[in-house]
Amino acid sequence: MNVIVSNRYQNMLATLDIDIIKSISGEFDVDELVAQFTNFYFNKMILDVTAIKGYQNIKNIQKLSVNFDMSKIILLLDDSAMVNSAGYLSQLVSMGIYNFTRNINAIKFLIDNPNSYKDVAQYHNLNNTEPSKEIVQVDSFAGSGSGGLRVIGFKNVTEHAGATTLVYMLKKHLEVSYNVVALEVEKEDFKYFNDKTLKATTELDLSFSIANSPEAEVILVDLNDSKQSNLCNEVIYLIEPGLIKLNKLIRSDRDAFERLKDKKIVLNKSILTSRDITDFEHESNSKIFFNIPYLDDKKEHEPVLDDFLIALGFSRVNGSEAGKTSLFNIFK
Image (tube, rainbow, N blue to C red; front, side):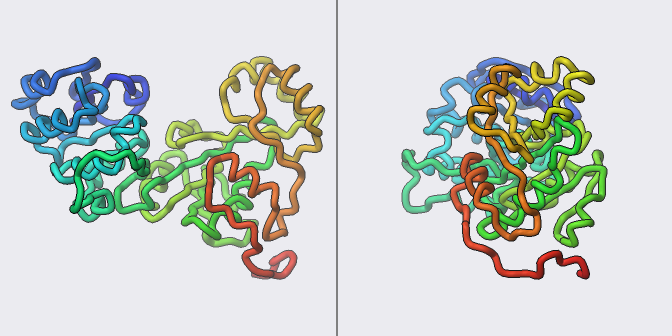
C-alpha cells in the first residue's frame, strides 16, 4: 500500500490508479513528516515536492533524505526554475534520491520499476553541486529513457476526423529526429499502413504499453473511444470542419464545444481559410490551435506537419525527405 503527500498537485495525484493506505494534503515541515511516517509501514510514498515547506532550499530535502529510506520515495517535482536546475537535481542524486519526475504518468511506472543510479547519472554533476540556473528535462517515465518523454493522445471529435492517419504521418515526420512509438487503442486500423512498427493495444493494456517503451522520446496514441486520456501529457482533439460533420456533432451533443473549452482543438482535413477559422471560433466559442488541410498520406513529407510539430514544441523537426519509396507500398 502507498502513501500520498500532496499540496499543489493534489487533484492530479488523486487520479492515480494505485493502492493508497493514507493520503494527506497541505504544507509540512520535514519534522512533521518524519513524526507521521517514521514508524508507519508503506510501500512507496508519492511526495509532491510543494508539500514540503521550504522545498526550494535543498537543505530541507537533505533533512528528508536523512530520515527516510529514499528508495521508497517518489518525488513529484514542480516546474520552478530552481527545482529543475542542474544543481538541484544533481544534489538529489547525491542524496540517493533517484525516483523524481515532473510527469504524473511516470509515477505508477516508478512504483514497480524504481530507478537506479545508472538511470539518473545523467543529472549528476560530480564537479559542481551548487545550484545553477540551467534547466533540464525530468519528464520521462524513467531516468534511463530519453530525458523528456511526451505522450500525446489524439481523439476524433467529429466522426472519422483522421486521427489514425494523422498519427501515422506524424510518426514518419518525428522518427527522423526522435525515438517514436505509435499506439492504437482497441482497433487495428494501423495494419492497413503496412508498417509493423505501429502497435495496437487495449484499454486495459495502454498504461503497460506506454511504460514498456523505455527508449521512447515521443509516444503518439490514437485513443479512439478510450477513457484513458489521463495517461497522456496532452490530448489533441480533431475536428473535420465540414458542414455535415459539424451538424451531426451538434445534433448528437449540443454541449460538445463547451466541453472542449481550454482543450487543444485541431482542424483536420480542413479547407477553411484564416477568415473562416476566425468565424468558426466566434460561432463555436472556441480557440483553434492549428489548421491542417487535406494531406496525401502517400507522401514521405508534408511541410505543414513540420509547422504543426513546431507549434507543439518539437525543436528537432527535419524537413528533408526520409527517402523515396514506391508510391503505394501495397505489396509489402
